[in-house]
Length: 176
Image (tube, rainbow, N blue to C red):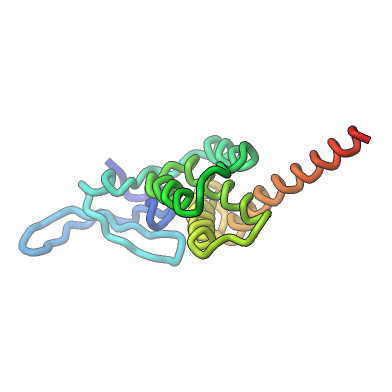
């Protein structure tokens, strides 16, 4: 069970903090609700206690896990065998899972595709949403504001592109 003050991640809304536990009456039935203050968009949400796990709400990761996640963004290549519709479906499933590593894969893959061509509308929206959700969790884990977390995320992604460019130049120089 979660406690007031816990830092949580809600796959549909990003990272937040449990601000209160309240009993509310709805349709004549009393029920316990967590009041969640979401970092992104300064939103407050009430969620029934018994629905927390069904919604995929989890504790935010630790700083060590976050470092591993950021490292994932520098590895592997997107699956180029998928068409746009298949990629969207696969990415949507990853995002709904709430798994931070799967979110990192979505960001990494769509970012890399965007470096070679313009993303379609659905891919662009997916990338923007995934980056916002990741930045909100980074902000809570590292005690940063959202802007700093977004900047760090951009730097991690851009560093991957710079590393790739440097590697290609190195390979070309060796072949001469």
